[in-house]
Each structure stands twice: as structure tokens, then as C-alpha cells.
Length: 304
Image 1 (tube, rainbow, N blue to C red):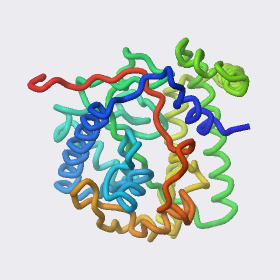
Image 2 (cartoon, rainbow, N blue to C red):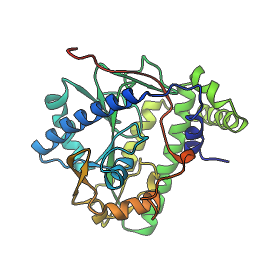
Image 3 (tube, helix red, strand yellow):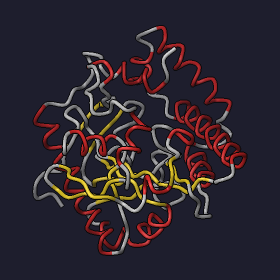
Image 4 (cartoon, rainbow, N blue to C red):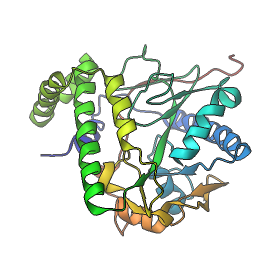
């Protein structure tokens, strides 16, 4: 059976789904770049390091910009720097953006923080246009310290992975959506997975989605500085993105859409771990990821 992520990626290619036009993709990327420049300026002012991460690092290294079929922008920040960012965000960026994060005053939209662009709309399957986080957004992944001890690392990783699974199932159950159910049930594989997630989600609904996100966020943290770091809430989950500390910090410099940007200290090691040693080779069409988009609306020029 396909993983849930691969199943969603397969469903996202359904010809009847909403597809972004070339003009919408170009405009979306302009919004991303403006938001990223604003965030970078704020971070530089306050001595905070923000770097590209995930597919955005791959885009910077392989394409010197966005991956041609990509429709998002991912950044990363260490836990200590994120605490600084929270303290200055509203004063510096609050006029244009909202910081949504677990264990923060704005409701979390996921297990990792997001910077939402005000007066925009970006609705993905499973979400509603009324959701406060259904906006164009930059994903912010937290780089955490990872225990050096093998047993402690394994136990912490298993616990965090279990919590993330429970929270993910509960999210499906709590945010049941007719549109999403329709597309999940188009195939037998999708229908079985959707029903399974609903059953498990009901089992874990003794906590709300927001409560689960707060628990996951707190569980992923490790205050002691160690020789290992990772991104527990990233695509590889807890164990999939653990690397030596010097893979991530201090940041290196790269190019993205004509701008100088910060990247992990060792982008090659980071990308090999996440995508394999052939990361410079373009993947086949069927493996190219895209989001499950329902609707999009941009902020109009001159809109307050």
C-alpha cells in the first residue's frame, strides 16, 4: 500500500481538481518571495538565522530558484531563534502577516509553524475557506537538538512519531470534509485509507487537534545542545532528518531567484539524506509533488 503522503500526491493529479494557471503560479511565487524577504529582513535585524529548507533547498541547488512544478516555499529556524522570532514578530511583521504555531497565541494549523499572508486565500483539501489558516503561507520548520545517546534518541523519536501519528489521525476525524472524502474515495486504496484514518482519529479524539499539535511541539523539543540536530516535523519525521549538527549550522549562502539566501551548512549532505544521492536528476512526472488545492485568492493591489 502507498504511504499516505504518496497517496495524496497521486490524488492531487486528478484532472478534475483545481489547477493553478501559469499566471497564478507566477503571482503566487511573487507573494512567497515578498514574504520571505520581509521575514529575512526582520530576522537579520534581530540576529536570527532563517534558511531555506526541504524542497526549497533542492530548488536553490538544482534550479537556482523554485522547482518548476513547486507551489510552496519552506524555511527553517532553530528552536532558540524561533523563540526570539515569536517575541518580535507582531511588532515587525504583524501588519501584513500572522504567525500560526503550536503553543502560541494564534491557533496552530499544523505540527509546525506557518507565516500566513493576510487578506489572501489558499484552501487545501481537508480545509475550509473559513479556516483562519486558509491563506497563502510560508512553512517554518523548527531545527531541534537531538539526544546523543542512542537509547534516549530512539525512545524520544518513537514517542514523537507515535504522537504525530495520533494527531494526524485525529485531524482527519475532526476536520471531515465532503470534498476531501469524495476524492479520497475515488479509489479503493484511497477509500480504505480514509476510513482507517477516521476510525483511528475517533479513537484519539479525546484531545482536540489544537491540543495534539501543542503536545507534539513540546515533545519534539530538547534543550541540551548536542552533536546532532534534526527536523522532527519535516517530511522525514523524527528519524528521517537527523544529521550531524554541522549539516545545519552555521548557515551557508546560496542563490534563489536571483537573491542571496541562507541554506544549511552542508546542503549536499542534507539533500542526499532527504532525496537520495541522485537529487540533481529530475524525478519522473508521476513523482512530482503538488498540493491538493481547492481555491486561491490574492490580495488586491492597494488593499489594506
